Image (cartoon, rainbow, N blue to C red; front, side):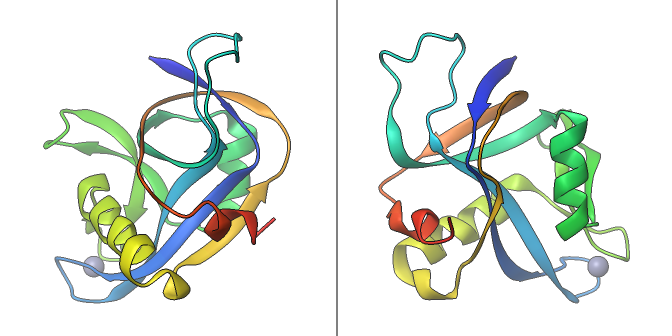
Length: 148
Ligand SMILES: [Zn+2]
């Protein structure tokens, strides 16, 4: 299932240890300030909140190319837990960073220690169809706004 995701799109990043080799890698989640939506109708959409994209199963080529430029170990992998293929950070040893593990840590950082979160604006304007889920919580949207 695809959502219409609109810019700006951000990369939320932190360091996390690989569960296989213990090496620390930069891990990433994609986020936006506009609620992903199923239709063009924006009347009910929520704006200026932090929406985290999870279980990204497909990405338009232009977006994926941009992400790879900053984060070359972002790859589509099969997840037995999710029973699907989705994009995630992969360690040099082949260890995978599942979305659940990464989301938990990044959510915790945003709530408890936001100053250590690395935020990069990937692209300002645009609209893409992305196959994913999304979540949103009571995160401070200024964390993203200040990266604009
Ligand atoms: Zn590893």
